[in-house]
Image 1 (cartoon, rainbow, N blue to C red):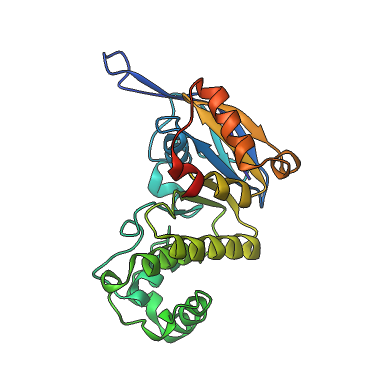
Image 2 (cartoon, helix red, strand yellow; image 1 turned 180 degrees about the vertical axis):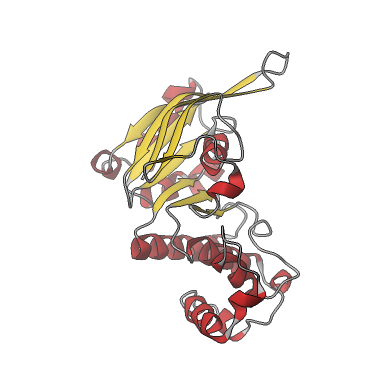
Length: 264
């Protein structure tokens, strides 16, 4: 479903600020694979996700989605294939628009239909049923401006919007990092529910080792723009947080001392 084939990306090439963000990355995901990506700041995790989304062009290599070479397609051309949830709950929604209008935008992602045509009664009933799955009461607040929702509510809505049309690829960029533990747990449970229900092919970035082991069927560790560990479901199932931290320290060559990664 997703093949990242020998991809490299360098920023500020041929300057004093040159930085190799990705180096000969190869990663292949079958339909329904849920790959969790971990690594220190600057490891290349977000760059990898942005390359898949089409935000950054690659310098070398290819990106395939469902057998189609999308390497030269721009971000807006890949939008119909990809759902994405960002770390900032404010980033995935339009705050001045209602919940119903935001759902309508998600419904027409990658298409030329106008917003009004997506808000007819049949679709609104569909939006209401989908919102009910969040168990937050948002189905009864469809005319509420999204900017008035809490961070957890907005992130839950962002997740629903990203998965509503069953994209070929779901990208989750530290989507619980800005939430308190209770809301983070809610979003993780919803994430698992939606991915399993729709059999979505997913890449999820996290700094939380416990989440990394609990979520997904595969785990990838990045360092200095390279994939240094790529665990299968069986290998991942045998790992504990301490094992993961030991592997992390071995790769980095230094003591690991960030409680946020362990505890979230």
